[in-house]
Length: 152
Image (tube, rainbow, N blue to C red; front, side, top):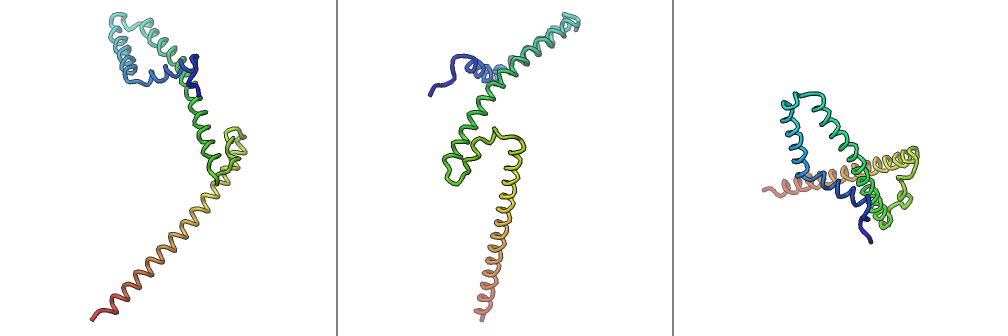
């Protein structure tokens, strides 16, 4: 299977990876320190402030699109992996494979069903825990009676 193509996806991925690297963070901090240090040279004027405002705005604007591209690809890949797990699990409901394509109303209906299933599971678990605790208490009482009955 082919990896990222040589186009925008590859470029966006590389830039997003680089932007998260500590070296680029240090570089950005260095630029801000250099900008602040030049403030007295330019009298902290409007042009001096405009340089940093314009630079950060342009970089932020472009980074939003690059990072969004990367995030979209990763979300789609994650969804495919989850779909494969659902498909490969015998007890799973294959109808959930395209859940992200359903309307909000349909998703909320399915969510309500799963909340109810979770509630039932918790009730069942609570019953089983209660039964186990009672069995342990009964066994402890039996052991105490047996121990006191064997005392001289």
